[in-house]
Image 1 (spheres, rainbow, N blue to C red):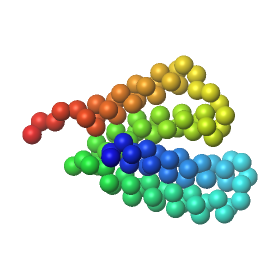
Image 2: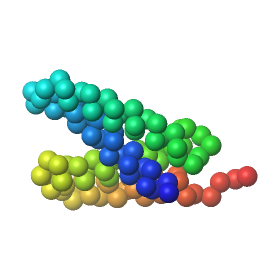
Image 3: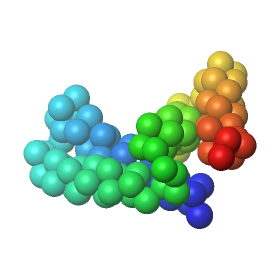
Length: 107
């Protein structure tokens, strides 16, 4: 369930941030800010649903997921194929996120 929450969280954050990007950098209507703000609120709320005792651990693990999701956005939404350095960096970040999420913890 944690991976599903992280994935949806990433979609909401990227969508929310892109709404602001579209308005500020691409001349989109200010109306884009309304769903953008709603998406960012959803992102913040979902991040609190991660099963961990510490916020910092959830944020750190989410960072790796966010990077991988951003590279997916680069390809799917912007039509730019990630290069080998993008993919290698994304893989390292996902490995780091997996270590943070699933690493054994002292009692």
